[in-house]
Image: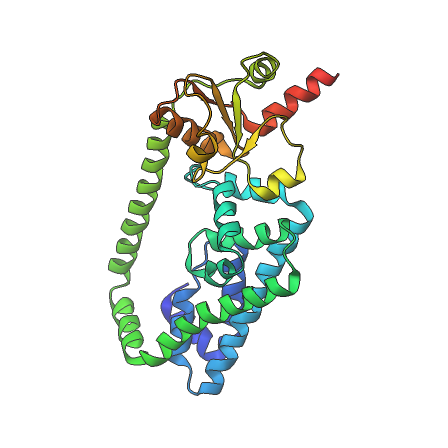
Length: 309
């Protein structure tokens, strides 16, 4: 849709346009909402009209967050694992995002809208962790008001600047489109390079689930470090003898373990991302043997099930 069409739509019914735009963006579709909010703010003729648009953005955002919250309540681990698989860069796994959520607590929901990626995973994590629903809705609402309010206020206060920018874009539509495509291509290239770099750095020897089960029955059993997030671990079976940790606390939790003894790391994320990072970190710290579990927790669970048959 062209800028002129968006402008006309906002002039005719800004409340509906903003509501739908914010709802779709907060659900997870790649539909930018901030430009629409800036434009809506610049077109508002009265504080009352601006307040109505803000209310529409607030309701849309809270509805989307509430839907994600309940998806986390109902499906927990599966929702988080699915979101993790959508990441271009698997090293930014949901388990680590969840750790940040737990560390920051309720204020993280207020700031979530300003952190790309985190705004999508924070509500289902809150649901999976059984956060009080009223507290969740209040925090999500406060975050929505802050996020949408800043964008609308900027548009309202900088009306002339926003309109001049729109006129400039309309006069140079092709140039603007090329610039956007170049920036998008650069961002995508950077993300793909990060993924390639991750795979290159994470080219480590793995251990299979069957090998791990056999090794844990021996006298010199390895130290098993479980990097799954709290929500995932709470809904699934604990691995006997495993020690729960995060990348931030990895060296502390493994500190007393002899560096000449084997260590196995595992997670529940795409390409064993966190487990690979942990193993690399341990090797760099001087541990002689640190291997990620191939296939992570799911592989261990499948191996246990096959042995039980």
